[in-house]
Length: 110
Length: 113
Image (cartoon, rainbow over all chains, first blue to last red; front, side):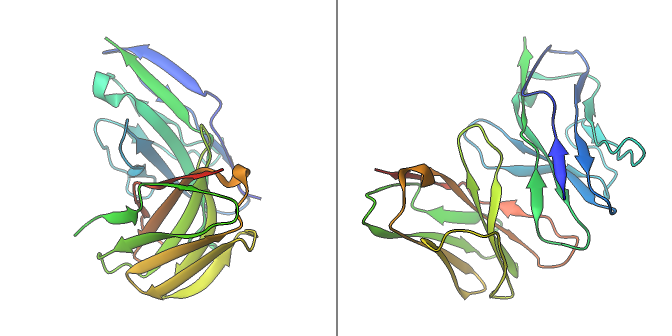
């Protein structure tokens, strides 16, 4: 069974501080991992995916297969980063089904 | 057009009503999805259409009936819903290939009285 765990429902940090949103997954195969973000009153949108290995809005995430983790990091948080963040998994074999974690609400304090 | 659109934005219906949710995309995507999102919960997959054929049904009750009239449109027909079906219903689309990103619509906020 595919499962995504985001242990923190809420995370609050000060502007300029480093941010790390945790994501762990369980799946026996080689999944594809994503981070989606939902800003206030906006639609859910893709932030980044592990196969792209890119940095978006200063965020990076590395897939650690040994620890089955895909933590999202940013060295210096900005107020506009405040949003709901979802980690999601797609089984390569399944191709279409996305399984989401419970989400972490990130608040950046001025 | 690079967006997924959904209508209506809000819908209130009684348990005996029949209503439909509509989703549209003009990005040439060949896969379309319905998700249900309860308050403070993540989206949960309901249905997937791939090349206009139903490819995934996540054991959704029959009071929800999806329809894909063409590659740009996806409907969700609602009948005899229960109050616990009140939620945000999200539509998404993707290219249809295995590595494709899903793009989400803004959702329809459904309230069942």
